Image 1 (tube, rainbow, N blue to C red):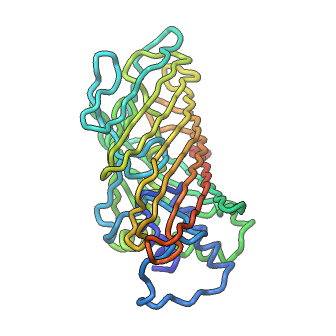
Image 2 (image 1 turned 180 degrees about the vertical axis):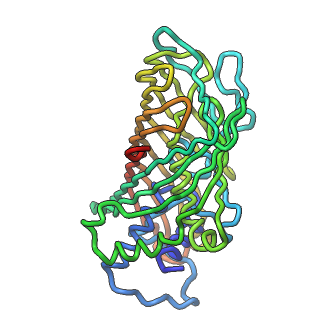
Image 3 (image 1 turned 90 degrees about the vertical axis):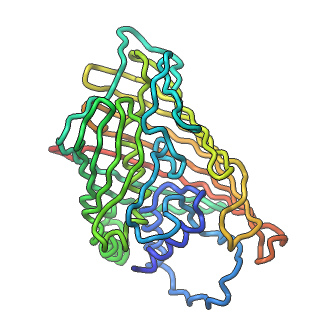
Length: 378
């Protein structure tokens, strides 16, 4: 594959717990940089030992550690923040209507305000075998050291269908119809050409996931032919997972009405690393068919050891926040979602190969905007 994808694999394998907003945006940034910088000479293999964190690197937490992409899977995300947190795909309902955790770290929903009368238990009742087409536009910017870079926007067109619907939830399949750059007429033709070549072979990738009646999303599994998996599955895993996390807002298991507010919290312990996330949601308006929900998100990862053997002594921490507004229906995936998230990542790493050397600090603020829409006529 190209240098762009090779670069992304490197970032994925050596920054497993450092989330960025979009794998595809990272790809666009790599392509953009390649079109505007001279080719750099490869570093001899013997020189590739421990190294300090580069000041211009874009971190992401979506790529798997190794493999061709066969059987890739990712747990549900927290409102599109990042992969690897793990969530409750089902969850028994407790007497007070909150989701009872079946396993440690499972998500919990608490109703803060029940809202106005009439109230009802709101559930998703998906319709089987109805294809829904959605587009997801991703726009990302990165700021570090008083410098900011807006990355080329990307657009994914995806078909989603509930293949099996049961009382416990629905099993969905989705297919990537195409990927394209947004605002192509405003971009360097070399970038457009490079991106088109990269994206051409990825159309047709598919994935499956489950959604229970309250909008909790289970594990997503990615599939495709051998060529797709070898050349693109690893890179697309995180971007498709972001799409999945935007398709429905989570609902409480108790009766709610217009103006209701609820909080979804989760604390995960991943190999000794505590990861906390919280979403506060409000039912702005509702009818028998659907409504509008606004969401505010917070995410924190405390300072911990950076999981890269080539950066001994390095640490990282993250503080994230965001908002989203869902226009949704109970019988299908959301028709429109507008989301904006900001992640502030701080890395401290030795300035040289000696882990006891003086540390260098790199701080990045990554902002990503998502726009999920229903194409005209669909």
